[in-house]
Image (cartoon, rainbow, N blue to C red):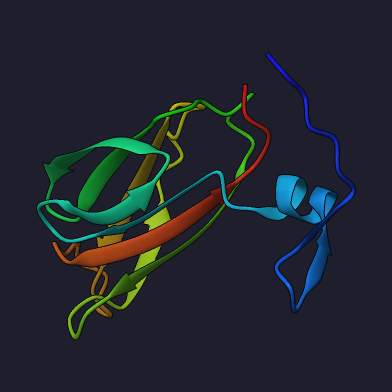
Length: 117
């Protein structure tokens, strides 16, 4: 195996330090409908656990379950999205709610940041 060491990347118009890319890029993200993943990176499968309760298995596990996630529910009926406290280093679980606090099957998106195992 070869190692390529560079300190900057340049696309012809912008230059960015490789540490910015390796330390700040999302390790996993998804755009999921209520029944399937529409597009993703680092997500191997999607499970519907019940109304408004979805699990996303990661292709590569995080080093611990202390990673950061930005998430959102989006549709006319979904008003907010929360992360389940049962998330693990290999699975991200989200709950989607209406403005009245009822669980709701709808679309969601999230990005996860942290150190991979």
